[in-house]
Length: 240
Image 1: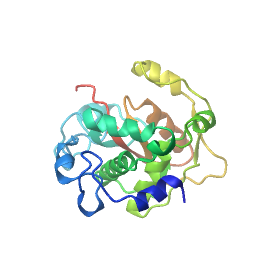
Image 2: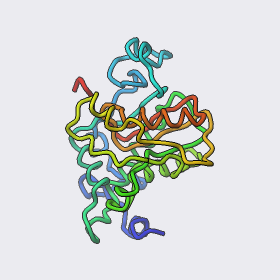
Image 3: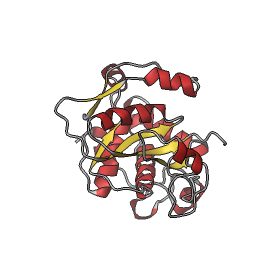
């Protein structure tokens, strides 16, 4: 068991927002949870920006230009308290101060919420991988941790090493949509011997333009996946 997991067992549950008591082991108390923004459920399952009337899943724009992803779903917009929680989860402080379980619990709760919105079930959960150099530098892959949380909630198998990142691409921060797509082109492949079923949930922490997720999805499709749903904690909205 990791020390981080042990801390979660030993430290009494408290709201990750205000520090007060949280109900039923939830990461946030009812008041803080209500303040945390969520994306509406009545939106396109791919862009999450334009409205769709059920049972229609995709807006006309996304229907006309759909790529390797069938859907791309996040629970919350990348803003405010959500941005703060995810940043603290991805970049914990060193030493004992970095063992705060609150941000991790909030991120896991949000990725589970996103999974509940998925229009298709899955046979396998696969995280977006870090390049080995980045993994050594950071010490853990946030997407892999989220994938385990999501898989456990839905009783699904998880394959944390099914995908590999073959290029250590520069950070996407500050790049426009076209530059992001060029930056990650050909960056992923499925490991030799990995078995990829037709229906896969692809997990990452934050989606901005979707370039990384689409490129990872292309590698999965090349290996046999046919319906790929990206599940994320939060996303940047172009019209925000």
